[in-house]
Length: 246
Image (cartoon, rainbow, N blue to C red; front, top):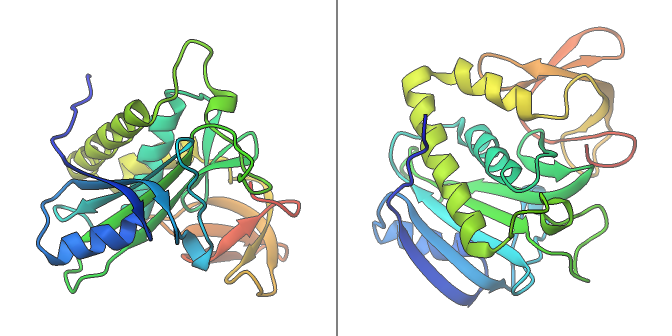
């Protein structure tokens, strides 16, 4: 079955604090579903758990997508599934690190920050950052799409963005026609976090709990089997393997 390319409104900026900030303002102004904000440079880009996300001009993709129709609290996992499928078009080794980072051979290539700045529980801003090419500003533990791409493909901001938007549109459609179990299966097939020895931390400075990541439950939460054999259900925080991201 072919993929449907979505209709979207593109707002292009040269420099912003963050694309999520711009998208938040547009959402309050009643921006349409699938309004997409891109910027060549972010001065205060941010990721999960309060971390900074560096956006280097010409070598990174920074975008935020306003979603106001048919979305719910599973949106972070739906977007992770979509983003991983899109990036696998360029680099087949891309995989999800729970909950929604994208890694290639252990290096972080993309991240997602989902925010709900409005009073409407069904409106979300999805911020996505992708390292397109190698550059000196990439932090330790990161990598680029270009470094792992299939040799016949060209990594350009416009075609990577279109693949991401297409996968998000089609994955959301599948979620509403096939249900969460179908997308959950896709997520788990794309995720490299399962059946590994991990340490879970609720916050970066918290004491970790050791165990194995086993699966997602029916609500989308991660099940970790602790060292004593009990299962713990988690919905927040991060997991670490051998001192680094999975």
